[in-house]
Image 1 (cartoon, chains in turn cyan, purple):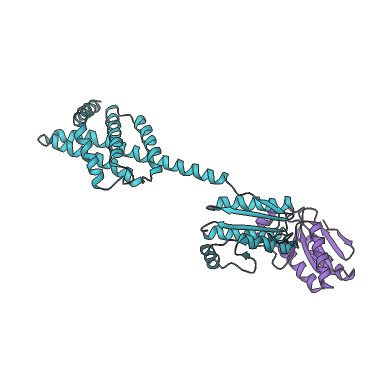
Image 2: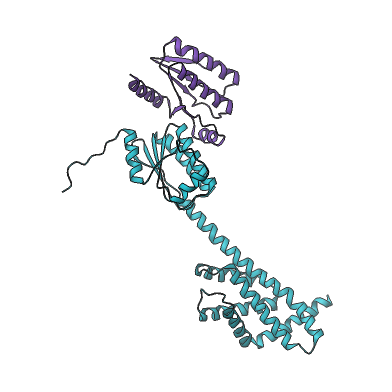
Length: 284
Length: 120
């Protein structure tokens, strides 16, 4: 108990010191940030403004030894700076820099009293480490939340199965396909084939930049499963990279019906279905 | 349970009622192979709409039926594979290669009629 009281007392002393030298320490910290080329996405004024509030929250967390307020602040800060392209290493970097700057100032203040310095550091270090931890975790959590939100959005923009003619479906796929989305697409397509009694399906992947081996295999399986339902699949808009992937995994090209672009795919589908599209008259 | 085989014009139709044992499948194979020549049929439709599982034995048997019937001078088409079954099959690598498939009985008949026309 006595030890704890002593530690609190030391922390109070420490906080008083940090409050007193607020202007000078803060400036030194900001200078260190620009020196190490962190937060390059932000202007000097912005860095200074943020640094001030981070500094104050930091001191407050040391004083109260509670981290909820700091946590909330870190989350709020992350929310603002993540869209600016600030990276995890930068956030962790600046908090560690602040820790260093403050530790140095403690060295300078207590250099004559080595015993006291030791005790002060004993009190300061665990708290400082916890602060660094809290800020870093807050940032990463916020980042993950943003990523989850975006994934959700992509999933909601999920791909429609469209009927363009009697017995002809198109499935335009846009964006990144992960295994989960691939499975969802397949389910939708196979169900769509049944309900629309489709004979031909055009899967257009012009909007898909790349595809890993798992998803490419899944695409091939989708083509085969559609055939089992009696539908022919035409894949259009294969990018050079995806074509390369398909060749690398050794796709049996006899099973894959591919056409360069969506228009060509639809034209071939119409031929398969026996449609003939003709202009009514010469365009004037 | 034996699979009933119906004769409809030049086409034989075998409809699976429920999950079949391996013995039933073997029985179906020999029955179809014999009847296709006896009735001088030109096409065979195997309707698997009622099957919610297709194991490797069933799918191999279907493939064998189709190939043997081809050798006996007729065409086979498998109809009514359920979407979930179809995807499970390809994941197991059971793709019924070289066997014609169609959505349902109607489509299967349309496919065979088309085939008969081109064969004439």
